[in-house]
Image 1: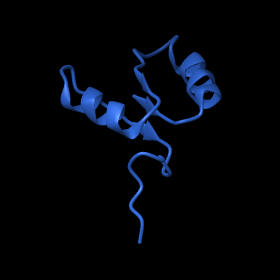
Image 2: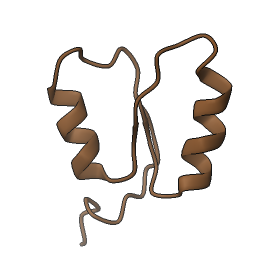
Image 3: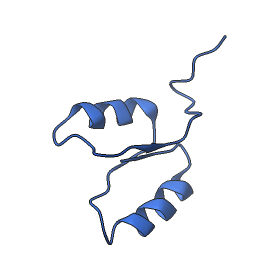
Length: 58
């Protein structure tokens, strides 16, 4: 699974990986959590560390 709030990043990484892997994408942290909780579970998650909808504020 690829998680990023930038659509261009999702597209580039998915294009690279799709010939070899089944790829799911999420454009928000909340959607990523939904996908991660569903079956089949992702084997690997590549994610942007700064997601606007889930970042904690000090």
